[in-house]
Length: 490
Image (cartoon, rainbow, N blue to C red; front, side):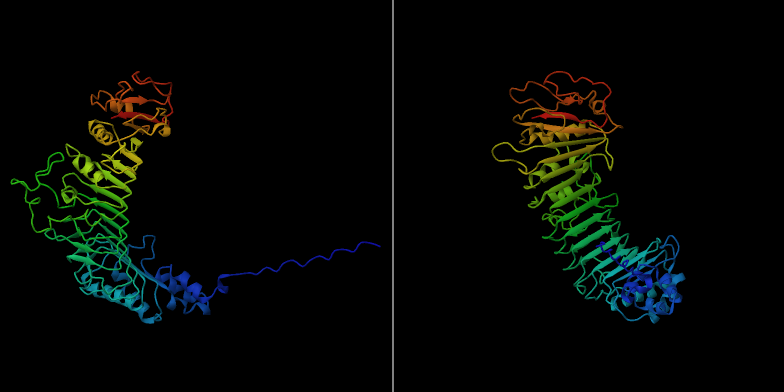
């Protein structure tokens, strides 16, 4: 009997899906990413598209050119007026308005557009004015149960506007290049706050009352440094006191501030700024991750340390050369002694990065008995461009705390664990040479512990471990990526 032939199965049906097969809600969501002018123009595509733009979930009122922010309010005013009149009163997820300039006569229109967005229950509101002339917002509080994110640029913010008690859902506030005419920013719901290149009255100190804050960025504030009220939930804070900071000691000299001496300068002796309380560090004492950068001569961080704030949760800390400028390195030692659970310390000294010619890493643990600093500190990074006397002074301070050598964990280091030794691993870029940096230095790095002999400032060039006491020798052409180690002995 002849075998039966297998019946060929029918080819699977292919379903063709085009943009016309998508539901209206998805099309309206896609249109929300277009500039409003382009979204309106889609009404000519087909009968179905005629009214889709009227119910988009977002509005982007920007220019149509490559540079979307290069458009004045005057060029878009009539279009926006018609847009808002013809649009359905559906809820808005986001409203983005970016203009190059706004004349005095057009300011009321922009404030009206903001109120329209709030009425439509907007959740994300962005308003940017790029021209040097700042746009003053109405001195009225925002009232919204739905606003979650507010992004402001180039505006004048009045006292009432900065009280966000009527915005219980607000979690993210970003202010960039704004003039702050109020004396206090307050919000119980705010979780993330970013203030960059903003300024206020030079004779007053802005207060920030945000007890629920989780992350803070305060960068290049012009005027007196804002006063931070307690932030018990704070996780991360980045503070950079730049040249615009007015809290500067007029008698500053190489890390020494005049403070409250009889001959102190007017800035240091000012009595109307809460100098008996910590301005910054007290409010950030609950943070787990801190980045504290300051120009030399600004006294806020140093004065705050007199209040002895304890950073009981701090895990990672990044500091710049400001903390290492005092003759006794007091600020650096003080903050280390008041960070009992610190795990990682990064010192970025006289090098703004991101590329540094010299990067040194060390690990250490405390000796037996009570320790002056955190027993959990297992990583210290020092980043700089040259290892000079100032850098060596910092390294000596670090080695002065009770330290045990952790041995062979360090790159190119095979030294057995020795009581009281600090091992550094140095990474040198092609542009810098550690040996050149150390050349002619007469600073003693440390003394060897008992039984180790005297080996001050030993440098391992990557050719193997050099016995203590023997001079360092150069290997044949070395790979610039190979590690070099400095042994600092207590």
